Length: 228
Image 1 (cartoon, rainbow, N blue to C red):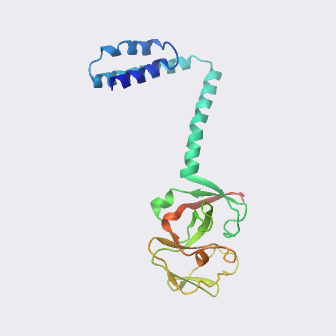
Image 2: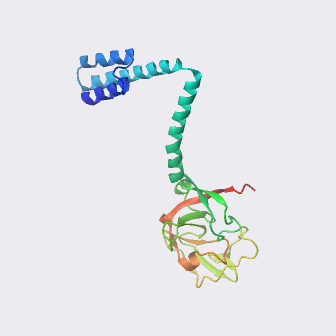
Image 3: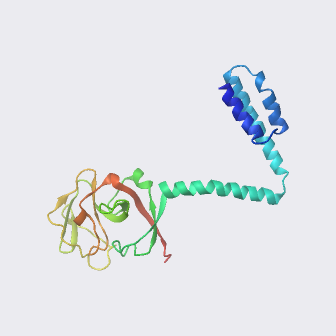
């Protein structure tokens, strides 16, 4: 532990230079006078604070233009990995390639999919969720959640019924042209019944069957393009 503490202090004080600043060099010179592992760690921590203050004092002596340039470079270096993490695990932009969710989202729309909140709040009726296509693994699909576990779903005469009650679906454009789903189905535990809003062209639970809840990767948050 003493060796590790000293190595960290040397790297902080000198970096790639042969000699560091006076405060850091003083802390480094007196390191060998410490006894025991924890005293060495505490001394190294104090030396790191001294190096930090020393560097800040040196930076304040630089011209304003140089300080601004350095700050911009550091901000860019921090923003790039942060943007990658957000895009991968928090908010992901998506391009809509098909009309299966029209008129809610149309072909060539850009939307944002939230990959976090639905894990905290749970999935609800009417949510538009993203999951991998059962037909083309790796290709995301967006569909609306119609049935949760325990719900009985039936489609007849162009309408959708949940537990015997017809659904009010104001998000549909014109008559709800929903093909017959066959016999009423009860959604099993851990699965979802999903439909596209453009029922005539959508491939959904009528053809693909239920989708596992744990296959849901995100929930539609907003359309970002076009702005209208």
